Image (cartoon, rainbow, N blue to C red; front, side, top):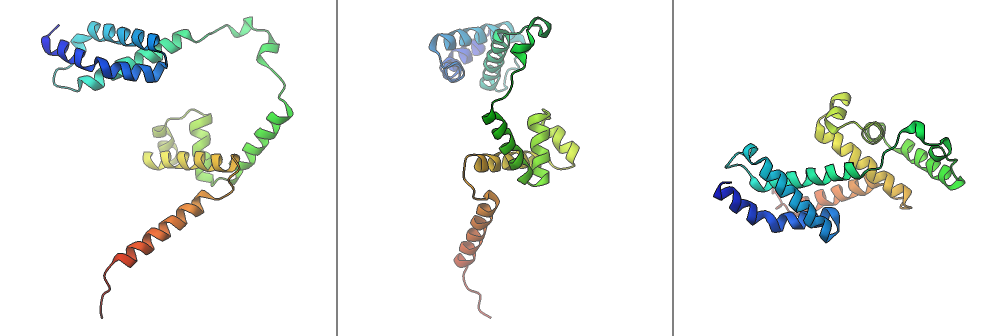
Length: 187
């Protein structure tokens, strides 16, 4: 192991521990995660390009290790071995009301936001795929999903004010204040 690699590894350990604690929320698990990430990094030392961002490389290794560990812990079973009663359950009256309320709120969304939300959340499309499918920029696709989620949260959690109207009023206030700040032009 080169001395610079070793030095960078030692320097980043405290930050890796902080990240691991934020992911695991358990000191022992965080220590194990850091140790596993360091072992992975040492094993893959040849793949690190000197002069690039060592910190980002290590944080990515730690995050990927955390995700891999979660996947390994996930309980799986063959669907054929599970009794039907464990898979299907009748919904309660409250569940049906919540689903109905969500459907009504979804129908109130503008068509572009509703489409974006359905494709990303329910269909699992990436923002890049959404942008390509709808013929818009990736930033526009992200914005549509964000605004749809925020609007649904507002409606479903009891705040009936329309976010678009609030944003419009805020934009008008900002324009008015800019106009008032400008010096008067004499004719």
